[in-house]
Image (cartoon, rainbow, N blue to C red; front, side, top):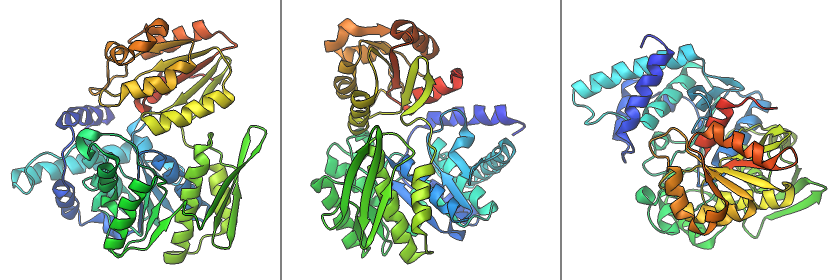
Length: 431
């Protein structure tokens, strides 16, 4: 492909292929590239919430130990390169386009020879690009965020050093199942025979699904919040300090990422680091804590303006919305205006019942993505809040209206999807 614009147009076109279950395309494409994912160790992180934060924390911990670390996450907020980085550096546009062009040529060959029956999806191609790039950069370890599920996720072609599962919540029921147990089983699909598992799930019914899969796979299982382990919170003003005990080691830490839930995400990252110290390379306790306390991760309880206060957060399901609700109640001054947009396949009514009662006004908008719900569709799912709802299809105008309504003393919460968060970060440069 000639330039970055052509790369973006190509990626936009292949989004139309949607979601396709199965690993054959990814396995065949990577095999044609000499399986780069087999040339370095990896950690794979799945879950409904917190997986991106845990990935960012682990990558930071590894970097503080001077390991050259590849990090693959999704979605991006502003540009594709955010998904693929080594250390603090995003993949360059040149390398992104070069590797995407290489993949496109290989895909055309595989289709022509009928080695693959259908075109790889958007996420499959980006995953292969990341795995290939990490090999080229000669990394020491990769941290890979699983996409939608687990069993059929493109990242599941990797045999990792460690599998991590953060939380289980209702999501993507069309693809993952209608019950929490079914969703847990799909996410537990990342568990490989003999590969250790770190589990941050607390609800017994889903915890049991993951533990049973680990036992059946002859994999060492570590439950982060088992009764044998200590997890508690100390509050110092508005700063939260957490204690997490693993064996004889007590980790005392204050996460750089906002929100009480980040204390739990950090405990998952610590548990993963402790296990890796045993099965991979020794990691220093002080550096682990420094990693937790210095991780940067955009779009999660991120303040992008102080006057007025504008907080952006990608809460998109019940669990993440409840975490945002708790943070707002404890930290955000009224009057509150919520700017909200969401994917059509989410439980919009549930999100509305959790978040909308906090707001004086709710402005419904939309981000430019084919799965996005329209403001009218959202309003239909939140009929009990009609008296406080306004419609504004353009997200930038929606935030401008929110600023006018809230004034300098009020607060604006932008939430519902990381796609909306990215759209706002792209179109605003607020400080």
